[in-house]
Amino acid sequence: MKLKEGFLLRTLGDSVVVVPVGQAAIDMRGMITLNGSGAFLWQALQEEQTEETLVQSLTQAYDVDEETAAADVRRFTALLRQHDLLCETEETA
Amino acid sequence: MRRATIAGLTVELCGCAQWLHADKLARFPAQEEQASMRITVEETEALTPPEGDTLGQAGAAVWKRGADGMTVLARRDQRVQVRFDADFSDVTIRLERGGAHADVHRYRYVMQAIGYRLLTQGGALLHSAGLSIRGIGVALSGRSGVGKSTLATLLCEADPTVAVLCEDAPAVCTTADGIELCGTPFCGDDERCENAHVPLRALVFLKQGNGNRLSPMAPRDALQALLENIVRPYYQDAVSAQAVDLALAWIGRIPMFEFENDGTPSAAEALLAALAENGVTEKGVKGDL
Image 1 (cartoon, each protein chain N blue to C red):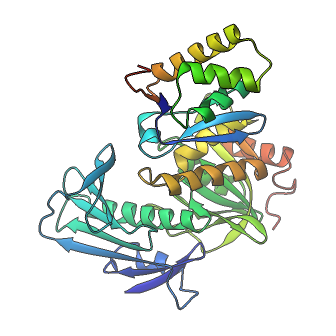
Image 2 (cartoon, each protein chain N blue to C red):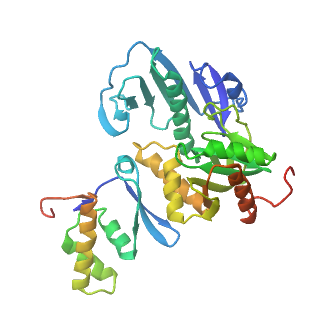
Image 3 (cartoon, helix red, strand yellow):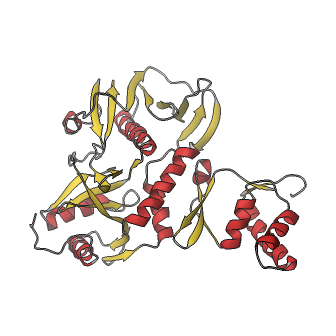
């Protein structure tokens, strides 16, 4: 899986926000606010990933056990799917 | 052909002598020999749908990339086509001869073209009523119909030091002196527009309500409001991204407020008082210049 194009990750004060540009700005009103691990996963998803590689990256970057990281990744990717922000390969769909 | 300098941008306007009332454009004489962009307006008998890959669509418009590399914005009713080059320095607006709302389309797409070009130069057009209050720039922004023009008029009536720089889309430009609010000829049907620039000290987003209250905006809300009101090309991600970064820069440097108001003369009094209370304008006797 990989993020669709047309989104910018930007720091706004203490927050990290995702702002749609191009056609994404027409299709999606508003913006997304991310916490630290969300921003980390968002950046990782600029390239093709699986849930396993995301969990691995998260456990390496944060002081978090695999079970918690897996739950975080599932929750985050479910949210992205809900808003149709992911390009899925057959393997990840 | 006419040349004009609008918010520091020297524009060559070809074939659109009837556009922008001549007296408004005359207030923006060319400051440079070399034009930064050229806008050509043509009238044709019939427009056919453009060919090319679809880049995006919204409302009545579809954007296509032609084989010649130009981007074409076409209205679905085939009354207008606008051809842009990559950096918006060369724009051609084709209108159906005798088509309905030709004046409106001409005004709108010339404004868009200049807004897009300004973005590539570090400035932007902002849908708002741009005001000078004792030499301090304040922009009243918000969706169409929210009462920008009404409040601008009420402010002028309440305080003779208030001048309207532009009713519809003033420019916001970063200069060596800071961020400035610049008058443009884009003032809709209103006659009030001035070729002047003042330091921009507040952006006020209007909201209709029963009372009159000025509140600081959270940065996230301010960003959203700015992105809804900066004139930007949705189909071109790079320039659209510049609009986002420009908005973020403004948020860090210009106070942003929401002004819930009832659209009455007391709203103008309340806003003037609240701007002074918040240090945007100096407290003083009305009429001080």
